[in-house]
Image: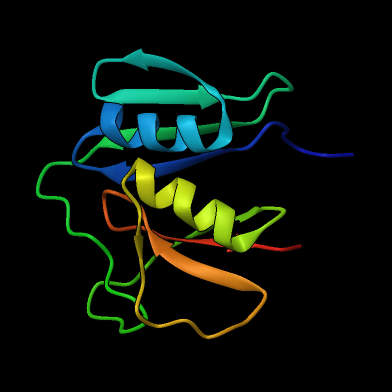
Length: 118
């Protein structure tokens, strides 16, 4: 039996509304803002939260000067189409691409995330 359920991933960032807008549009999830915190939720219950952190320092990847701490992998049908869409939302393709079935990007706050074929 599980001890807990419905885990939420929380990302530190300098601007929760802006980062929630980025991920909300990418995933087509609805935003639920409050002061210094925004949740985005899927219709089926999954949630990602964004909290404001003063003096936020973006991760540096793949170097570890400022560790990435965590990253999201999201599944897409076509890497080229998905890349164009996330770049249009404000993502940046990372110059280091260690694989062929996924691509690494940085969200607008500098967190690495991957578009994956499976």
